[in-house]
Image (tube, rainbow, N blue to C red; front, side, top):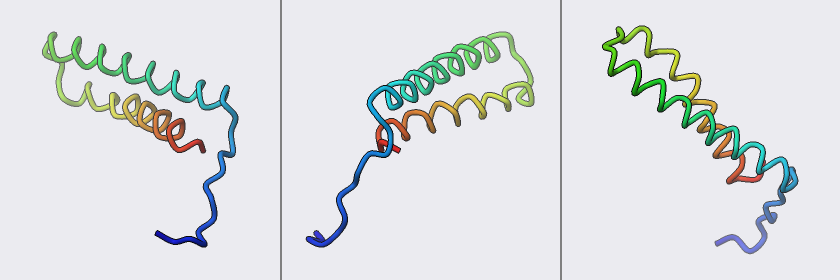
Length: 69
């Protein structure tokens, strides 16, 4: 452990972190729902590819909220 390492300071407030978490959770729920629907109807894999964007937004929102950035 480095005793002289700078302390991590949050650069966003509580409200902004909450917004990012809500966006992350919302994108994950929508992505998961669409994934289930597309798999159940037997949609081609190419149609499921845009789900990557939703899961990317979900991960970004979650990690930004967790890391306070």
